[in-house]
Image (cartoon, rainbow, N blue to C red; front, side, top):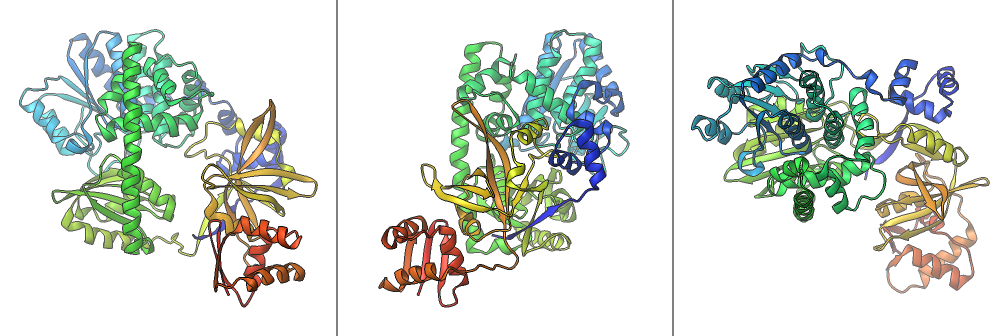
Length: 639
């Protein structure tokens, strides 16, 4: 595990006080705003009040009005409109918006979602062939969350006298398709300022404009719910229009009018007020499970269902598929870790790991988990019949899409953006692709193999943390990419009452104490940090959580990691070290293996002393004649 170095932005004191006074905020909350590059009063007001009065005009988006007018023409002429979308939440919710609105006005509409393993991402050859041989008969094709990289396929389709409207948010290559209309803010000549909308957000903006002509009543709130789901699930920056969609959309979701969404939340056991967390970690994985493990058509049908019994049946099917997804994901993750450890792949600049017949539906999740575990960009490739399909996840310092561009001569196909991308590659090219990708990534000046930089919003004392600060921070919801949950560092404090908790003892619980103030801390799954926590770290890096017990509100800190002291120094209590050494020397075996928490109990009971786990670790670190290792809660001492 890399050592942690904190990055804390410094701001002019007058600038911080100006914001605090104007908006009645604490200094910490003002710094949080500045850390998100929200500085002017106008920016702050838009952030604190994400209202549709600030929503960018649809007319600012190249081809949007043109595309809407083509759809009106298709409706008036009873043309067949087909919506072609991706199999993830963004694609599913984009398709759903179009189907719901267009079917309401009686348009001749259908949709198509490719099968992940058989057809892959984007416009499939199977789909194009189905048009050629007459199996699919359409007049107007609308692609959502895909299409911008499909130059040849779009060309084939337009040659059959079918107009194509592309609504996509992925990066544009040098050549873009020759479509009737392309709505993608990442086009160089698109004047929009909101460049980070996902397909669901773009579809929402598109359909709001279309509805100015169609004038369907009481439907825009429903479209907003879909857009909110896609926006949060696709992990786009929650700033500008995205923040408005997420914030206002969550309000609507808490009183959802979408029958399928209501049933999905019931099946998932969501009882609390829905926030961005519920969408990102509970709702989205279930919707995604359809496209990963079966067909995304199940998810689309759920999202557009009008019958409660059907919706409940489909929601239960997604719950089942999500459980299957978890099993497949864990199997591949463990196999990937075994390959990475045995082949020392974690030493590379970017981890590329491959396996035969790995389930393509979960390799993206596995890549995310590997990136989190090893703190490096990861590419996971499933090989079948000589071809590999891969999914990549990256970190802020490394643009994985640009990295793929640098080695695209080895790729059959690729697409994506800075933090996530997909690829298709011949098995024979994986080795050289891996080598050259690592060479390119090694040129990145931000790669540092010795430590991990963690950005925090502010450095606090225990006494600075209270309900007022929590309530202020809560006003900054919804949190997500571009507006992360505030991370704080607590310094100059000591720990008390550290223990392992949880059914399997995988969580850490302790209190941070400073003067007359103390506050509880929980580290979920952070037993691997135990030695660092017990070694008098310089800072505890945490976020805030509300804990309500017997109707009383309290603040609890969630432990993320710790910042170690650069120069460890500890004044040893001679009496306590004598007691510890006496027990060590008394043991006959050369290597002592014990649970450190049980060791503390044993020492204090046998010798009527008050030694803590922190003191044991610190004394062992200072001892010259003892070797030790602490792996989670198990302490090994070699005499």
